[in-house]
Image 1 (cartoon, rainbow, N blue to C red):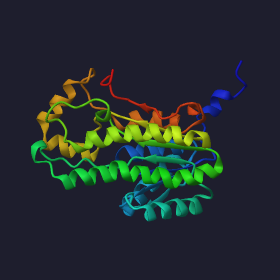
Image 2 (cartoon, helix red, strand yellow):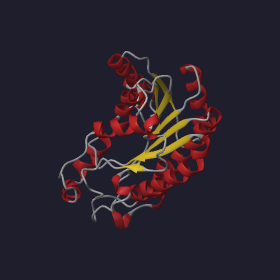
Image 3 (spheres, rainbow, N blue to C red):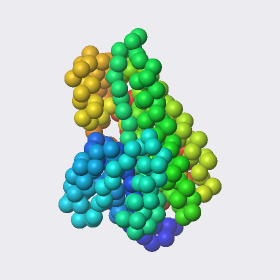
Length: 264
């Protein structure tokens, strides 16, 4: 039989310190709030410090737990190192939970897709995430415990129909999925678990913009989902808490897909 209180402790993040990069809005802000509710001390970080401050304040008001805000350029290793150092100093200890929710989807028509736009997307969505994992994992290794959650997309495993998406975004998410798998294996001996979440299309501010620009592409996309519906940001909160908890201690390099059956 299980020890008394075993289940209660599984998802309790009390005593842990989490940084959510890309946490100023969209999926990141929901996951940051969810981690705070689960007991973690939370910081949100992005390029826009004012937005981060507003999100941190909202989390504090909603949960009664102080949340922190930092600015970061997630494509700059020096900026990421500064974030890790500053967050540890402000939050009272080493950051042992990292959520990489940053990313871009720079839409361009397929046959005219600029190489520089493709490169920029890969730099932010893949190389930047790798750098964040590298920097924060170095400190987690010293602790002997850590959790990293990379936010991918269902498009990284299920190719969207022609015209529904651009070239770079699905390609970057497919690369991110494999990066998550590779780092999961590499970091596992140090007590660090690296996993991912791949939601289907979620109507964040970024996605709404693309929906308005390409309604036909949206119709094509929804046709391939059994529920014929978009995801909601809350869909990622439960998986995020799970992957950051002791309940995921034996989960390594996996990506969970709250996608309405799209990747069935």
